[in-house]
Amino acid sequence: MRYIISTVLGLVFTVVAIATTFFHYVEGWAWIDAYYFTVVTLSTVGYGDLTPKTDAGKIGATILIFVGLGVFALAVQQIGLYVSRQSEDE
Image (cartoon, rainbow, N blue to C red):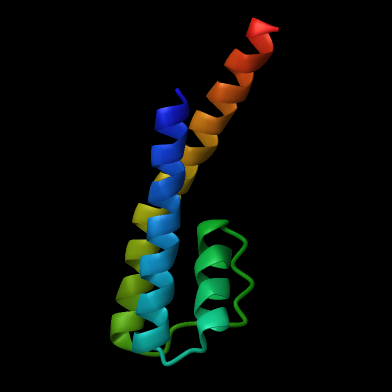
């Protein structure tokens, strides 16, 4: 079970790293802004203070929404399952 959680968290980290790098280069944002946009998008908060201006950035954001939310939801589900099983063992 721990292997699954570490794999899923690694996947989340990979999605965040790729998306942050993408927005840094495509939109020309500072690293912190690209990271912030990625996390705000993945968490579904969506403040709207940063928005992609280029067509490539807009397409990248939609891909991030579909792929990233699935990965993020999987991570939350697996962590919840792990915590639930841990409390049953006690």
